[in-house]
Length: 486
Image (tube, rainbow, N blue to C red; front, side):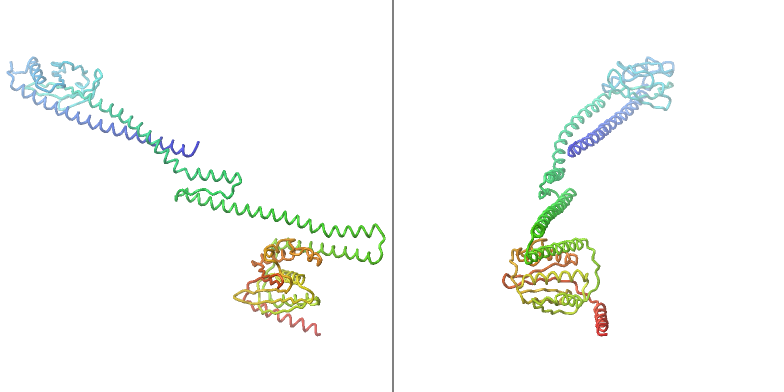
């Protein structure tokens, strides 16, 4: 059952119950008020008749000093004729034997039994489909105590109650019909946001993750729509990210397979040549050299992949590190690479980092700068403290990187010049590893390159005020130099 129909149904049930009870109470209240008014009038009329009877009895000649029965009948008949039509009366003697009764006064004597001296009584009775108010009281006429009963027709009051219920039932039905129409419109309007959300979920279920539910109100359902749209946006972003990650993995696997295929083909080909035929010394050395070179490239590629996997796990131990130790390691590492000119220029400082990983980043950046430079090319390695950060920069004056390629060079296995990179044992994993390490340090690689001019790659780490680490580094350095001299 739809929510709008439930809302409509329960509203109509509540309306029907409310209208039914309120109508019953209202009609009965009007009826009881009218009936009480008629009872009061009937009692007043009884009192007036009693007073009139007593007065008339005093004016009638009396035989033997007492009021005779025929005189009582005559007085009662005169009173009946003098009063309004529609009221009946009955007179009974001391033993409650009926002396006079109006035509049509057929009520039983139950009220007469309840009436006594100074006791007035009344009741509502139904005779032949009509309703009457039966009143009773005592009359003191000379030396006799008589009983006076009256009947007043109040059928109109009961008829009005019946008519009232009938009219109210019709009005209730009419109001329910009108209420159904109005509540149908209201429930449809109130549940419109739910219908729009249902439509949105079905569209998203069908794969349209960009679809958003339309907000039609500012109430709780409107807030629910806004929350749903935010959730849908987050879901769409996550799905797009997952799709990009899946695509990246597929590209990674394809590139990895391609990169494996080339060296393995060379290794298998030259190994097959060595084992299947007898070669002279020069060809044997050349074949072995190809096998060694391609094997080293596979080794480098596997180590880089392992480094990327380890880095993504975030298993790094950060500590306060003096940048001087990092630059001295770089200087020592590339001191024997005499085919290039290196220029180091850096400020002192302490950074919060994993020293070995930062060294790996700089080694890869310098290695790429060497691959992009000609023999005897200048490689500039610098460090500068500025505004709370320490900036590392590696600059070469080589062939440069086209602008459209710069956003892709941190992807695994991506190489701008594949033939040149492979000739120098490159696999396109160095900058991918750098990007992963810098992401772990909440930093990123910034590339400034111009084809034919050169490339500058830099990154920034948070500069700290911990001079203690730098001081301990200098002390350790002096101790090591002393041990070397000895």
